[in-house]
Length: 120
Image (cartoon, rainbow, N blue to C red):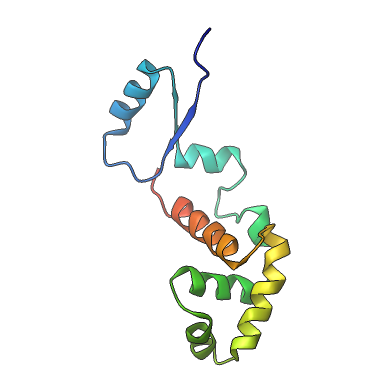
């Protein structure tokens, strides 16, 4: 029985992309650049993905601060609001991101930022 093919996406690979692609092809795998992945999923031309377009600018700002490692209190002080307001923004963002908790929400923001800033 043949091995199933897998999809390998390199976002921060220091190896020559042609070399990486050749090695993956020899192993029966597929090499896809981050740029191609964004293009095929509709995340190109500076367009934010659908899950981010659902967020208000403030919710996005709060999640970005949390993704940078700030605590709720630090984000509140930075934005000049209460910690309760920060928690409220996070609570409203959770269903929009289909996240169960703030950790999942922050990880989605971090994953998107890493993918969006990776040169192709």
